[in-house]
Image (tube, rainbow over all chains, first blue to last red):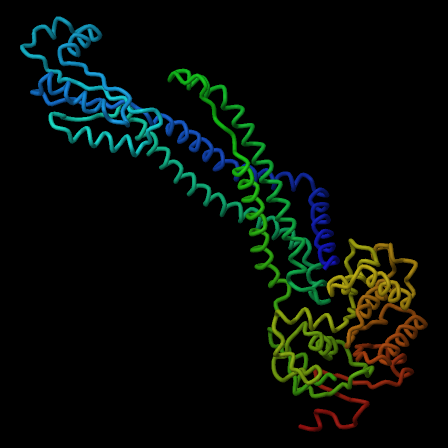
Length: 304
Length: 229
């Protein structure tokens, strides 16, 4: 058993030696693999960061409940009291129709135009602030319950656009998966083609091995290890590229965040688990590509 | 025991290399296969080594038809058949030692066992002092001896050799044949295709002469396959 592992180790090391022996070709192949892995990984990180960021905005957002035009101030106050008693609401602020109109007239500059109106078009409004940390589902349920109260015309979430952005990010995430899968297939072709050329170059050697009784597994082994090294190298370089991209994006991201009052906005890099997945994907695709290439071309060397 | 049972081998294009050959070679015997170029000697050996499969008929090794040997079983079968090739078929990027060690490595022998057996095999072909050299630095005759060492190192039960002494001087040829004889003494079946009539005559072993894919003469029996039909 010890000899078995020693031989595997020897083949592992010698296949690395062969790659080092032709540095330019090896670096080119590894770079192609790295870029192919890096692209979907970078998009995944951006989407993941976006979802995390907007996930924070999704909770504890204010709800604005607009009462029906005919609702009285008393009924608005009774709803305010009712809602204030709820455990999931931190506070409820009543903006009566007159105060709302006055505030609008002052802020909008349409004061004179508004004075010409016979009646106040604005309803009484309750600004409801849920307790901190109330989840998205609970907030949605609260909104539903408030909307079902008598005299309440409609309830709006102040950050409706966040949900739209999240939906968009979810869509982009799905697109990233599809692109990732396509690039993965492309990577299999690249690795398979590289191994195929290697097999062509070593056709005589394979033929001799087969004639003296080498099993397919034995012959395939160095090619599989070559694929493994390509994949591992590609995965590690992809990780490095990813950190380089993140470093390049961190400045503009901070600037973008400051425009929306989120001065500390930053993109977090891959977690240990994500880094392991990136390297693992490289290794698996490397092994799979070389497996397919060897299985396909070995038969052509010894067609019996 | 090797038995050809009405074996025909036709290559794509229609060339019939062997036609209805029936012959039995006893286990542990040394048998020469002779004949002119294109007589079918190499095909005869390739069918034993299962490098080719017969178009018709059966090749039986120890009463087992090679037809039943699947692709998966082929490597194990070939590990028990040592092959010496006319063009040596050596790995030119590896030293002599590694070339000879290859069947043992493939067979999963231990490091110590490999060292012992490779040196013994190289000693028998008088190349012990060249184990670190690359094949390209050796003469054609030396390369042939590396091929012979590789064929015998794993002690296969059958050794097939296609013109094994073609590049060797008479003295070395004779030594190699004596080596093959010693292998026969321990039960290895040797089948050798050769043009070297003088050497074959002096050895006095069985001789199967092929002509146009048929057995022209078999020294073990005066009755040829052609006469049977």
